Length: 125
Image (tube, rainbow, N blue to C red):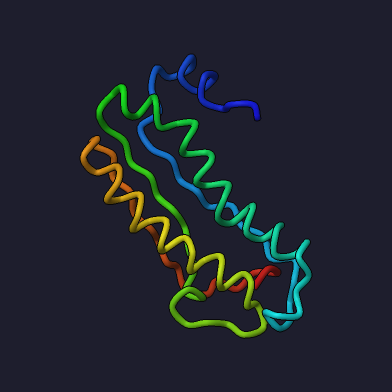
């Protein structure tokens, strides 16, 4: 997997923060009606990608002794949306990732927080 950070470090000398805002939802329908392929796509992009991206950036933040990570979840994590159940599960998982990483990384001077925005009217919503 190519790393984005060497180019950013070369350009600016440091990476102070990471915002993980990418998400997909290729399925509208019941949670248990989604195929394994749909589950994999949603969980890979919405949950695994932020964790793996941060794992690449972490050595740079650890070396500096500081950093901020913002995960972007969704109101669906708090108010489940049946018609986008797998997406809801993925955004709920980000809350758990936030809680775990914030405890794990705080002693290293790295803050991890999670935004839970409400519904924004777009083609996606």
